Image (cartoon, rainbow, N blue to C red; front, side):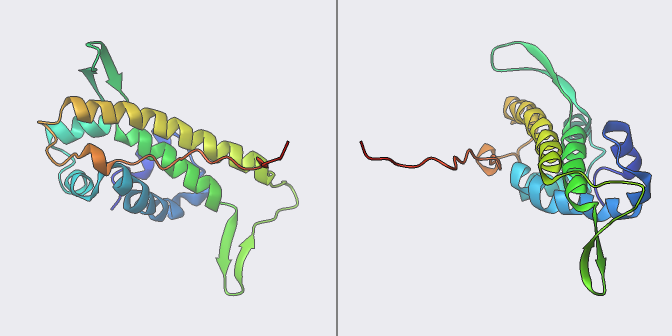
Length: 172
């Protein structure tokens, strides 16, 4: 069972109730891949098996803390991060159905699909929001290393690396 339940997802970033049945699989895939990369497997497993402990609840729901400059700030919690990662994956997969003839794109006469560019913008926007908030969560984890001994900052990797395309080398 996923950390973030469907009703919790709806409170943070809504997805269509028509696709509620697909939610559990999407949420579990995000935990097994993206969240495992960000947190490391030991901390993720602890969150999955002990979500009600005070420390894990603060990590999941958000908490105030003093950052490295001594300023008091609040992180929104991993539930917020998970919700936006789930939403991004949901947007990528919602328009397709797996049938006996293979994957097909849904098509209805009364609606029009968005373009690939529009979909990419929505997905990248949701991922950006999630990763921005994760940076604050990471700062919280680093500030509270003694409370989270399973956290290893080196286990956290940034999945979005800058890639430059379209630059050609020219000779003068």
